Image (cartoon, rainbow, N blue to C red):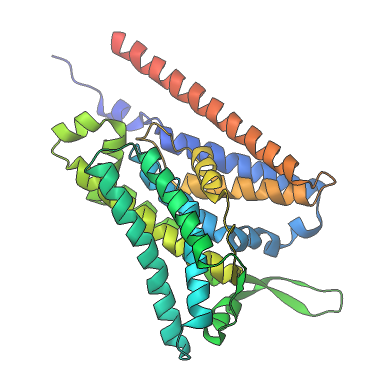
Length: 357
């Protein structure tokens, strides 16, 4: 009887997982893209603030992209998140303008509870329909999207601007980083600034990454998306895992609506339109498969950064019309879908050949 050489076993490198490989590809493409912008376009791209603005301007998108990543890893989908953002923004704006108490701290606390409550209400409805009644998630969340958009218009067809002093303090509060700033032409130091919403978005990424990687719920989500029947055989309560993934998605959508309002303290009936499509695209670019079982919120973060960088680059170029941004984003999404197909196809073929040998 022969035994494996322990030295060979120690030196053997485990192959990267599908999620890790796709995440590394997304990170690499973002780095190359941004470096090319710094080299060839210069100007604002050479300032750290331009990089931080990718987070400041896309904090809400980062949060809902993370919420979609959780659901998509579990083999589901949630296209109501954009509608929830719009409804949350309008409801919070109306509350702050017409019903909020003068006490700043209490007004902010109640606004946060309202935003999370709206997200939770949709999550409970959609999660129950998808998990326990086993209705197709696309149909359920499509209904949720229409409901949220309709309620937003019902609340107000006119724009609502937030002027509440307590919330304005929250909007204007920024983390200043002097050593990453730049010296203006008049000789004054302009520190780099990071908005509270951007900090919240980064914290959400960290928390969801830890949840997916180290908790029983996270392992259950991957198992559910990988193979539902296998998950059942392993003793996983797939209905509970699916339901909780939609709870997380809904709560994050409500939080994203609040963060959106913190960045632009005004609401209208068409706010955050198409943001659910951008979130799905960012998740796919970051390595999340629509078929489930594979995904990583770090990759999702860089998926958002890639889309944001495309918008910045085209916006500062002669081709600054919106359709060029849409075309570039669509082309990038198509490239990543093709990459996913090629990589996973080669790995599947390699695995079959290894079994035969």
